[in-house]
Image (tube, rainbow, N blue to C red):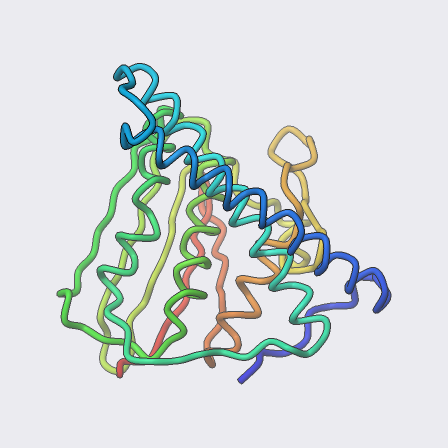
Length: 238
């Protein structure tokens, strides 16, 4: 099942195909880098100090961020080429959410931002979803919140309702301006922060996340707060 097509990016078929091939080529060396980092961190190539292990964790975390960026670009290429297909199954949403936020919680802490998980469902509550893609959506929303919250608080909440589960990510950052709100899901649109500076990133994270959630029959909603904003989506109970 696929969601509605994204707004026209202005890229032709050849550019999209190049994007897809380039991301495939980038992934191969990244896998090698991560493999060696893991081997060194585990001491399989010799003893290392705690300080060295800490630095390796930074390399590992950044390699995962690069992997997420590659995933996003490849996913966008699939959407543009009409090759986007969900693989849905019964998924335990609580463990999935915790896995999605593990390293990001550490990143928030290093940035001086309070990170809170409010998972109000048991590990036995199942939703009908594509687990890998929902995990990436949650990671994208939390990563986005960390980027634009210089201090304050980020909360990931999972709530069971009558026929679905609501997942939300709320922050107290600079938020989304009223002028940018109608365009936040457009491909390559990055908007501006509260001081008028262009936001960092590829401008594809929210585009892909919105498409993934729409493909699940839901909507990725954005509510402006004072301060910050709240992104949320619902998944049907299995």
